[in-house]
Amino acid sequence: MDSKEKCQPETDRIAVTPEGVLRVPDKPIVSFIEGDGIGPDIWAAAKGVLDAAISFAYGDRRRITWLEVLAGEKAYREAGEWLPERTLQAIKNHVVAIKGPLTTPVGEGIRSVNVALRQRLDLYACVRPIRYIRGVPSPVRHPERVNMVVFRENTEDVYAGIEWEAQSSEAEAVIAFLKDQMGVRVANDSAIGVKPMSRRASRRLVARAIQYALDHDLPSVTLVHKGNIMKYTEGAFMKWGYELAREMFGDHIVVESDGGLEPDGKAPPGKVVIKDRIADMMFQQVLLRPEAYHVIATPNLNGDYLSDALAAQVGGLGMAPGANFADNCALFEATHGTAPRYAGQDKANPISLILSGVMMLEYLGWMEAASAIEHAIQKSISDALVTYDLARQMPGSQEVRCSEFAEAVIERLTWPGHAGT
Ligand code: NAD
Image (tube, rainbow, N blue to C red):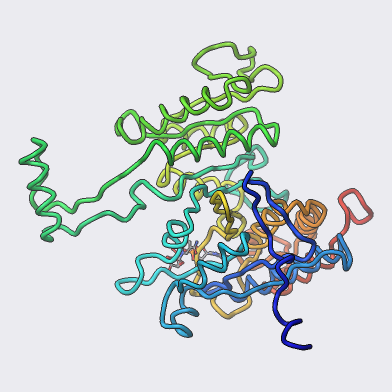
């Protein structure tokens, strides 16, 4: 192979047109971050499944050229930086990326590689679908009633990282400012954190959630907030959400509090109900009436808590996929962490990362490969082949290693409805 053949031709780049339309060549370059801890194990499993499903669905016509980019411990070891600038550039240039979990260094270096990735790439919408896979052990009686997609604002709120240690000169200066300029008293030994929430960031997140509901024919979008207490941040999120819904989607929505819903609380055909719920009450609702909620749009911290709680209802973090979207790029990722206790043991559950890959295939428009994988995962679980985390809760199941689970999924790639289902 000469040097020219080694470079990636431009035509293999995914692109976003000025109108925001994704252009995907048949052999796109996709960047990946292997991840720390269990990352290398679950990434190897996920990559194997994704490649096999693409080949199963499209033969030689389509394939992904994987481009490794460094972040986290591997980047620190090899390049002396937790998040090299060229990693950010590569993700931007190639538009679509997928990652394993990354360690958050404690007491040194970068605050959080994950948060830095989201902020530097302006990945403002964290999208987490939560759906039950039949046969997975769950702590609730009707996990199959959970079928929601959480849209979590990803760049603001207390995650903006604006905080000062108690008794630091910065905290003391802010406390003095609050007392002298704003007439507000705060205990002198307080730590101080700031919770910024902007109209722009709230609106673009809600817009994405409503568009998703319309694109997927889903009946409702719920704005989840704590506006009864935090009126000018969480309360404003709700206000801006309704404002955006009426302005941008007026012909396609019905606001619950305006009335006009069908007697069963549903919107008239073809329309989406926009409603809001206070965050604490929402935690009850998703346990008691999960079937009443479809798309959730919520600020950063609520979204973090709520999506983990929902993941537990359908079988735990090892099962929950996720994606982070900017206007011009997308980063797909497992929602769990690095599970350091199981690092390098070929033991962890790769489903979360495989399903994040399924979301990625759907984003590329490669629906056949995506649905073949979902079907094969369901089949592997129905055949009681599962990793340790599920096996210990599934009497009669056969515990398999991470790589063996991937092999089981690959062996079961068939079209939904075909023999063997
Ligand atoms: P964790 O998600 O790594 O682990 C929580 C529990 O779930 C542990 O018992 C773990 O063994 C189990 N678990 C997680 N993933 C699993 C899988 N795929 N299969 C089977 N069991 C699984 O959370 P943690 O222990 O709080 O965090 C460990 C590290 O990961 C920290 O450095 C943290 O900052 C980081 N983290 C990264 C991300 C990310 O990259 N998006 C997310 C969360 C935590």
